[in-house]
Structures are given as structure tokens and as C-alpha cells.
Length: 91
Image (tube, rainbow, N blue to C red):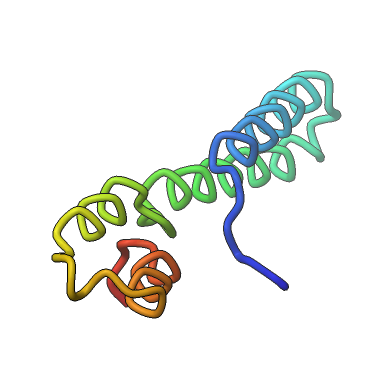
């Protein structure tokens, strides 16, 4: 089974390392390459901004809240699975 859930923290750490690497390389680059490293820094920054602003793919708190709201008659396997699979996120 494939899932699109990943660790935001891990991706940010990876990008921060790449960003730092591009800054260091840019400092030691020949003048002709400075623009290339500047572009890399800018693009990594935009990607990091996107990741920070991206909505959560799974909201554990909302899932728990929806499960707590179920009454005894609604608490079926199918209903619980639908809530858990939806992840508390609309859309």
C-alpha cells in the first residue's frame, strides 16, 4: 500500500542541509557560478516555505475528536475505519 504521508521535519532538515551546502559552495564559487548558487538558495527557500504552509495530511486530534463524538449505535467498524482513513482532513 502506498501513502503520501511523510515527515515534514525530515524533509525540512534535508532541505536546510542542502540550503547550507549551497550557501557554502556559493561563497567559494567562481564569480560565474555565484548566480547558479544564488538560484539554488532561492529555490530551496521557496520549497521550504511551501512545506511550512502545506496543510497537514492527517490530523490525529481531529480523528480522536470524531471518534469521541460517536454514540454507541454509530460505533461500527465501518464508521470507525472511514473516520480513520479520512484522517480528520477535508478534501
